[in-house]
Length: 104
Image (tube, rainbow, N blue to C red):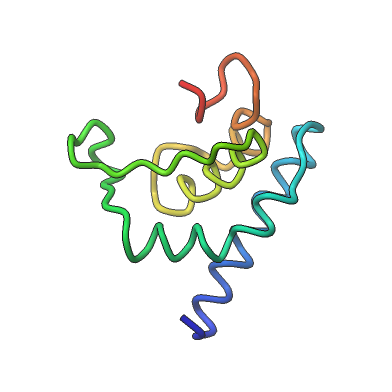
């Protein structure tokens, strides 16, 4: 996992997460920044998911236990093709808001 593409993906997750926290004006980017590499490996090599069928029974779940992890999850969902537009993510809908996409 040392390819330039892997590093680009990991850094993209970090920056999307930090950008989302900044735009939401709430939260802390520390958890997504520190765990982006681990989340990337889990997401790309171990978890099974299908963005075209989100109710698929065998879909693996990644549930960050820290509230700060919601923006990490939101970035992963967006980058893997799930129905989570960048505008919603930037508007803070992945944070601890009533209609947050990752809280539904």
